[in-house]
Amino acid sequence: MTTWSELTWSELLPEILNTIAGKLDFYEDYINFLCVCTSWKSSATTTKNLIQNLPSRFPMLMLAESNTTEDPNHQHRRFFLLSNGGAMRNLPLPEAHRQRCISTHGWLLITGEQEFYTKLVNPLSHTQIELPELYMFEELYFDRDEWMYYGFCMRKALFTSSNPLSSDPSFHVIIIWGKTIGFCRPGDRSWTRIDGWEGNLFDIAYHRMRKRLYVVATMGTIYECDIADDVLGPLTLSPVTTFPVKEFGCSCVPWAYLLEWGPNSLLMVTRERHYFKKQDDEYGRYGPYGTSRFQCFVFGLDDGKWSKTAYLGDKAVFVGFNSSFAIDGGEGVKPNCIYFTDDLYEPYRGLPDGGGGDVGVYHMVNGRIETIFDSQESVFRGSPPLWLQPSTLPVIKGLK
Image (cartoon, rainbow, N blue to C red; front, side):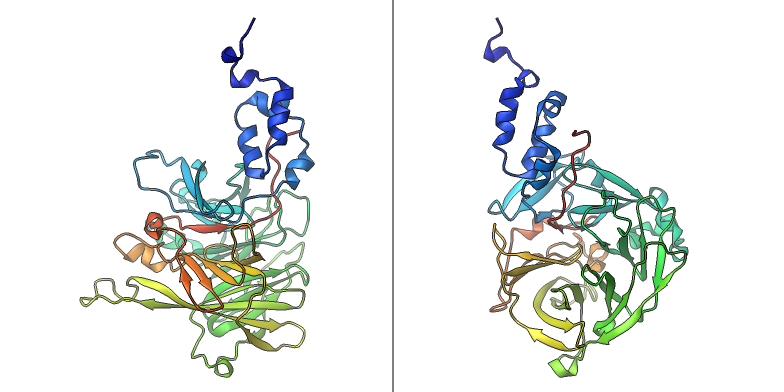
């Protein structure tokens, strides 16, 4: 007779496994449960619909790749969980090793030097979706010796709907790469360019209600275009408005983020930084720096009017090397705050230890900046710390 102590994890009875599975409250925990072994995945009777409806501990902050000896093969990444009181979790993510990552809707867009590939990776399920290679952009023909420079120019990724695994024909991936905007659908052979703006690109946002792409560039000029289902050539942006800097007592727009703000509005968030110069100018223009202030402005898409707001209500806004997003406060997320990561990519190449330290929570009510953790734990030269957004979560591969 086999005793309990002689049983292996893979030999547990289905009834016991289903009891364990029924006590799991979060999507991520269910993923860990299914990944223990093949029998645990095949024995669980929980349906796909149930796992899809489990809540997630997102948003999470994915930290930079570690330089410690604890993970010499760099197969894991550390994640900072807001909903778990700031707990750290190590998750396997070999796909991101030495690769440049940005995020949108809980997915990572990863690119690497080998063939200038791009792909979407879900950090929880490890589902991967191949995208067209970046050299499909004519302006991105460059020497491999310059790859590091161009790799840092990948600034933003954006989905037009939350689930890239759906059969929605209107789904597109949109990216900002340096001075280029492009979009594609999974299965496309190349990226399609978007033209028609002036100055530097700050951010992109997709307004789901209006089904239009909005772009914010130098001086807060906002452009728009319609991302059609079938496009054979480049699209052209049309100017919508320019932020009235003098009306609000601003001298310029130093940096800006853009996101959907209700059915008829956009929210533009401006970010100001201060720099700590060295006497010998050791670091040049991009010396040690930190965020000093955020300001928020609402643009009405119907009336064309701008207004300043110091109150985000119950919402918290997340900005950085992720598609800018807002969620309701609660579960460890503080309302009326801006959660930010370090997205000033120049220091990543110029400072001795790289960038990544400018991470925190900005309180709109009084301008106080709260540190999230010891940010020096996440300095880096390659992949940045970034927020992972709540979204429609993918079904685990092989789950019936």
